[in-house]
Image (tube, rainbow, N blue to C red):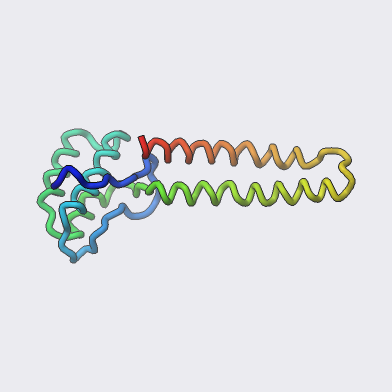
Length: 146
């Protein structure tokens, strides 16, 4: 495995689904594919899902893997890790509807004569959880770049 490869960006938070194995089950794998799986295993150790002993055993098997199925077997019992791009997309999908609905509510309030500022209630009630989710996703994404 060469040391000048570009490291993959993986989320520190797991999500449901299959783990990321680039090669198909019957396809022969490359050193890059193996490195990608070792990076995922390293993150699972950091999150406490694997002991150092189990990590070492899995890395040995990953380095000897021939096909995508061999690599997938080492990740099968672990949750899927999301990429930085998936995190960005999810962050946008959380914030965009909030911004669109908020704009609509403020426009309705303005068109009806700027009376009692009623839009503040839905904006805050929905805004606090949206901001919390956005911050958590942003923190995970920044953690990938660090």
